[in-house]
Length: 163
Image 1 (cartoon, rainbow, N blue to C red):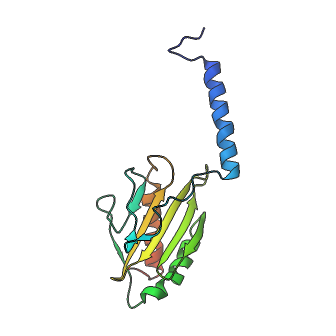
Image 2: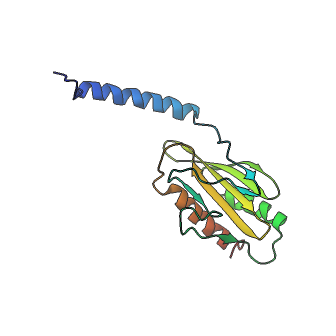
Image 3: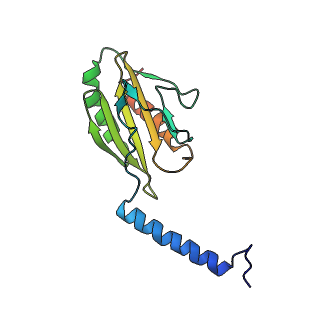
């Protein structure tokens, strides 16, 4: 017998099935929120992270303790982006959306549910490379964006692009 405080097992299964169907439709059609308006270069830098813990920003050192990245050697600021593009395009499930001579925006999809994260790179005049990786949905990310920035840092070091 159902009580208002405790739904029946059948109701819970129906609810779970309905959620599964909706999720399958969303995943199959790629219906996720569009890119936030905060993407891109504003006032010479990348936008800040939202108030949720699903973002890493090397320029603002968010979360606390995030290390900055600096270009190696004498690679010119505008010569760096084509090399950065090669590294970013080699990352799994990553698609470059736009790029200029100092900026790259890419979308990275999660393996299972195809959640979209935005990955941005900006080459600053002082030879700092600012990276921002943020989830579009949810509050947390189970450390995915931090791991992505760490992986990208390693790839860039191996390519000899940063020190």
